[in-house]
Every structure is written in C-alpha cells, then in structure tokens.
Amino acid sequence: MELIVVRPEEFGEAAMNALDRALAATERPSLGIPTGSTPVPLYERLAEITYCFPPGSVCFALDEYVTARADATGTNAAFFRRHWPAHLPTVTTPDAGAADPEAAIAAHCRAIAAHGGLEVVLLGIGRNGHIAFNEPGSERDAGCRVVTLAEETRRAAAADWPEGAPTRGMTIGVREIMAARRAILLVTGPAKAAALRAAITGPVTATLPASYLQEHRSLVIVCDTAAWSSAALQ
Ligand code: PGA
Image (cartoon, rainbow, N blue to C red):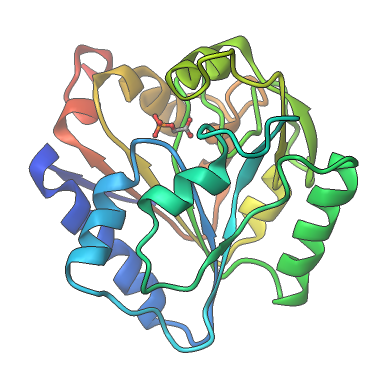
C-alpha cells in the first residue's frame, strides 16, 4: 500500500499523478470511474491539461442508482455529463431506468469482463466505509448486483435528489474491485477520516468494505491533510 498525503489544493494534481503512473504501466486499459465530490478536482485537472488516456481506453462507472426518474440530475450518468472531461472516452453507465436492473448491471459487468476486467479502478469511500455501492455487510466475494442503499448513503446524496434519493443501486462488486490490477483510493475532508483510518488500520471486515483494500495487490491512497491529520487519526 502506498499512501500519498497532500494539501487540499494539491489533491487534483496528486490524484492525476497517481492515475498517470498507473496508466503508464499499461496499454489499452479499462478503467473503473467513480462519482461523488471527491474525484471532481481530479476530473477538473484532467480537463484543464487535456490529459489523454492510452488509445483504446474504455471507462466504466462503478455504480448507478436504480430509479424511475432516469433523467434526474442525481444519477451517475448525469454526474458524468456534468463533470467528466469531454475529450476523454465516455464513461459507460448501467441504465438507471432499466426495467430489469439486475440485467442492466449484469450487462455492464459482462462488458467489463469482455475487456479482461478492470486495469485501473479509481475509488472514493463512503463515511460508512462503502466502496462503489458495496455497503457495510458486503462480503469479500460479492459480485456485480443490485443493492439496497444504506441510509447514510442516501442522506449523503440528498442534495442531488430533491424528492429523496433512490433506495436501490447497481454496483460492481467487491470482487471486481479486488480483481482490478491497480486500485487508487481517493479521500478528502475530515468527515472521511474515521472511515479512512478504520479501512487501513482496522480489521479486514464486511462491516467496513473499504478494509478489503488492505489485501489489494496494488493500492495507492491519495488523501488530503484534512482526511489524514484529523483527530480521528491521532
Ligand atoms: P463523495 O462520495 O466523494 O461524494 O464523498 C464518495 C463515496 O461515497 O464513495
């Protein structure tokens, strides 16, 4: 495990450098791409310098909501339309409004598998220790599936869902994350300090799915000083 701690204003650049190192080691990668406020400085930086992925790269969303309001601004597809750099390969998302969400996430994961799995997975972490929508209770071998979202996750998303965040999501599994050749965990802000500390120093447990990353073969954590030096880490 490699840990990179930077000042908040340096976070986007540091995350980009970690991604650049991961991509330098590979050709035609498949990438797992997160949503949320954490990766936004990275995406802004990628746009700013028109950073290019290797030719033939493919990008897959880690997760998506299940909703009848598939055109809502809170979906991950809408997030990528707002925040993902236009010059980079489009991020494929499972269809939020699919009549059969199980089939939608299965098709998403078949597409990932057809590319040999994920070469690089970028991750955020929830305050409850989730990775993608693998909420507490997710087993180490949990695969792609439809899940019930934790109340904390729905609360965190409330601003994007004025009528209430969906109760269900679709996610790639812990299994697909752990199978990725390289993982980069992005963490910012004091609210994530306790989850970060537990993920890297606590027991490996389904109670905190991010703790599985301790066993990942190639993990780089990029975090800011607010997440790292908060009282929770003392
Ligand atoms: P956030 O979400 O970046 O908006 O905090 C991260 C996550 O829940 O994975």
